[in-house]
Length: 266
Image (tube, rainbow, N blue to C red; front, side):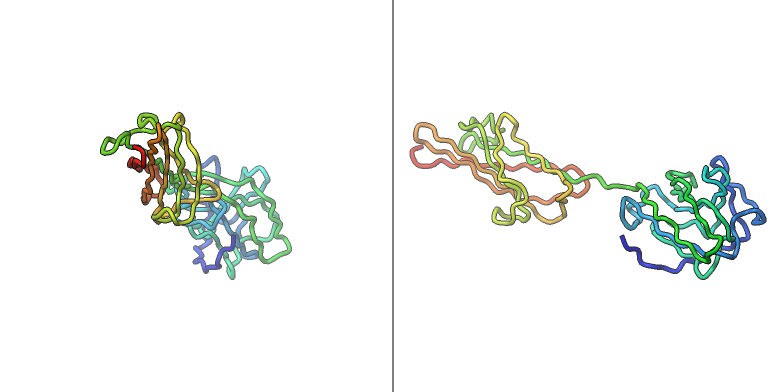
């Protein structure tokens, strides 16, 4: 995923932080990896994409720690290597922030209290002979909104003018109904699910959930349903198109009442 470059203000390197056992101790720069030989840049993703305020969730800031060893036991950071999660990138150029040498870098995702929520394994960074280095891109786990779903409660008239009942209670002779879901408010709009035949023994509710190939939006949808029966030459038909809209990122419930229509011979 491409990130757009931005210019970041650099804090003073007069102080750095030594990360030990989860605590941050302020120390001077006399024995740290920081210096004026090498500049750094890097990107980070959240949930596999460019981070946003929403997707960052509990991640408040992202920090780069520079360690002396691969075990990550002796690591340092500085204010110029701590960023808002939603920034998604940093570039210290033209300022050089590291002394030439061989280090291990670790990305960390922090909450608003400074607690480390996630971190990467330290990776080797050899900047003994270069003036600039780009860090490997981590992918942090962030906030994922709940999926949108809708349960359509299909209810059939057992008799003309009568109440609306479940499929089984309405005594539909063939004990089944057919439904479709349309992307639009009418039964002539594009079909996104169905036609599907559902047995009354399965129930009178139909559930639609988001999946890898389809996601709901705030536009209208229509549920089309039909059923027929013929008893002693009396043909009964149930047909309805029920439009609805959804509240996203939650479970929705709508009712589709299907009126009984009596044909010839009844």
